[in-house]
Amino acid sequence: LEPEAKRVFGFRSTQSEEELIKSRRFTKHAGYFISMIDKALGMLGPDIELLTEILMELGVKHVSYGVEPEYFPSMGRALIHSIQDTLGEKHFTPEIKDSWVEVYGALSYDMIRAQKNA
Image (spheres, rainbow, N blue to C red):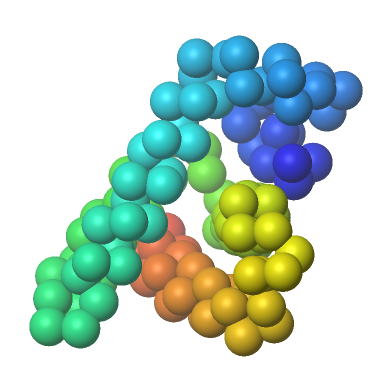
């Protein structure tokens, strides 16, 4: 698990993955995060303007949670790590990694832009 993500969400850096997985707060947020990524992927293409608007609103909302733009890279690393774990080394090719890095970068860009303008 991305160590910086633990700090961002208020968990002790010494907490194990097992402890985090048992945490209702952690699993609830992880579910929201994956759900948002799934919805965003489904909106790429013809709904890109609506997706941009949603991500901008989400970025502003996260300001009230105390989320800083500097937190987004650690979330991206956590996402990539999770995808790598799920797919396994054989299927997690450099091309797949590059694609996910690009997608996350594009999605987080709109949220960060909104935060800086809030």
